[in-house]
Length: 192
Picture (tube, rainbow, N blue to C red):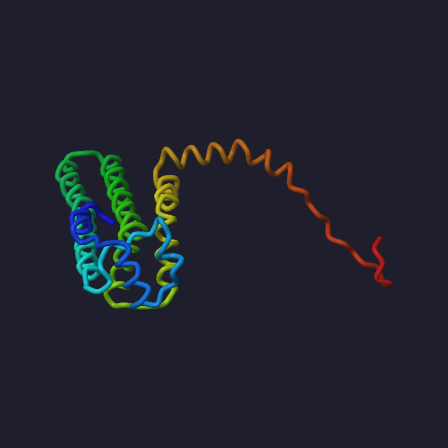
């Protein structure tokens, strides 16, 4: 949850024993997961504070996504104004930088903000299927991998490093590959 939620959670966190009993009674959930020491009910199940949390989270996600894309667009405009008298090579480098910046913003949105947005919409719409949680888990858990992959695929120093490593170890790996010859059969289906 974002830091903007902490005051609301602190103010609205109910008595845990009463809230857990009410949660089990009203929502028919499995008691082991609710009575676990690590589980905390952050809002009273008898009122609609979860909707307030979801709306605040949605506003936070939409606002942060807007700021990310606005910042990349503004960086593009500011750098474009400075590139009026530069060489073609510098302009190409500037365009590559802007494309990569927008790609990074898209990766952050896809793997960090979109799952939070999806989880809050599911909470507001009250969908009770499992597949959205699988998508949310996959996207959230692979956000560092996606960021690292974009670094290695789209930035020149990392590309150079990968190609150097590949050239260095390609012969080493190819020597270890065992090649299998095709098997020929005779007329009597015996190998020779």
